[in-house]
Image (cartoon, rainbow, N blue to C red; front, side, top):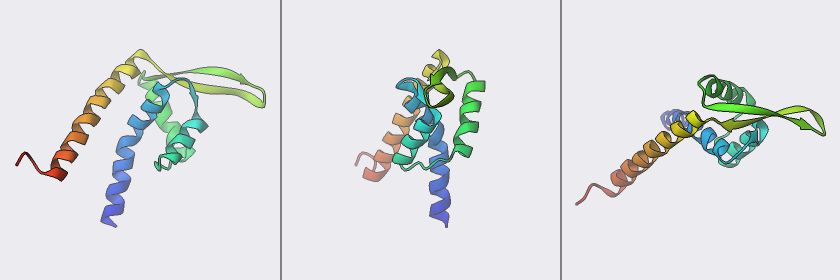
Length: 111
């Protein structure tokens, strides 16, 4: 149970970063983001992703474009704003620092 809770918290903590990484590659539809996250075993349901996308948009990190669809209503495609790209750079640095700390901890400090 303890490991399960920790794993859940770790996934939640990295979700925002992963969403920004996915969107940084170019315009993307929300269901495609969900598919990529599921493939990466960061299983996310729409009920988790849409509030996150809204929060990122309200914080100025995302924008969106409406694109006409041949099979239904227009679709909202998300893109990073310049501020979103800057935040992503900062998160990249943090991720590299965390990965280094984990690697160092696993291998032991310089012996």
